[in-house]
Image 1 (tube, helix red, strand yellow):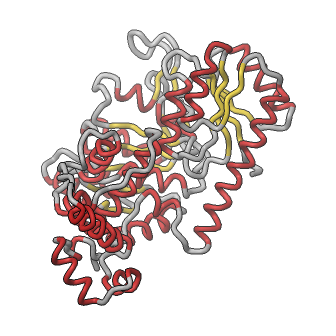
Image 2: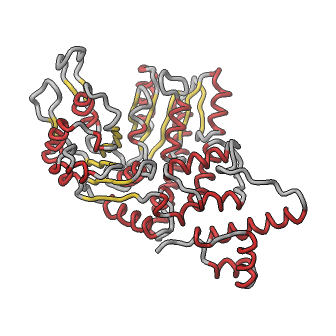
Image 3: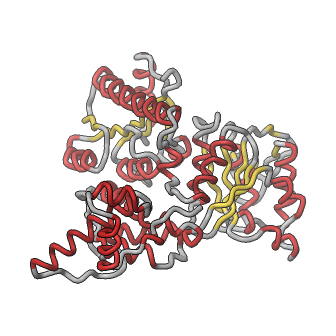
Length: 444
């Protein structure tokens, strides 16, 4: 990993500077931060480095930072620096996924040794992912956007094709379908993967501050602007800017953003100086922007300039056959995230999950998986406990068949062959247990 980097986070400036100097003398490339906010913008599936963070910091502490990093990629090594009284907290962090912790005071050699081992581990992870992708096996894109339906196969194909380019992209899909996951995937497989990924929620920016937030300002540009400030566009130079729900951008601001798209330059508020902008823009929308154009709420020229490439993220109703496998994956992820043992999902829960509607899409399905792992409910419907021996045997047999159907995507031949029974017997047992292959069959 020639481009390997250490992201060092510590709110104490003197300690941060001295630690960085010692690590650079040991041959490492180090980037320092006083808090964890901007660190998350540099983390992705292709991040070739290690995060070293103090565990006690104002605002976002080291534990919270580690959890947010693990939500992006569970295999980024996070090393926590702890004081003597925080050892129990650090041990708890190890159980929750920290690579290691090091206690103050420490020698530079001690920290460098831990980092080298973490770097080696990260290098092996990235190499393994690359080999899988080259071999045509399940890769990171498929892990983040699983599904065997044709709409998901097509989506992953388009992501790989578009991701390697620098084309501005519009991602369209219902709320909770995974539009930001697609945007991050595009960034992570691009040449900009090691640069910032800046997500901007257009619907959440305060109207009176939106221009300052995006373009930055000079001192004195407006009352209260006592110091110059980079905007989010300028902060993301070299990387990717995600404009989430761009349909919510105020109409008067759309003209200014159109100029940014066309000319790739910005001017801070209160300044006439033009600043070059090297970024890739990705926008998402849950509404039909063409309908917004017709209604006079969105600029037609901005829409045509923005959607150089368009990706449609299907809702769960458009890929119902993926729901059982997706739910099982979300359950495994939730168990790992909460530090729980692997959870066995009863077959009646899988059947119920597959037949229900999910208007909140993947987000709602993930919440159901979390509740199941935390023991708050049984995936949305409580299953009756089998008490007698015959009921227990029947439940066990139904579970095996249901799991085999899920594993083979509803294709019956490999199911009855793997179970060592005839096709007729499989049909009879599916009818007996109320198992319907149509909810598990891959869509064409």
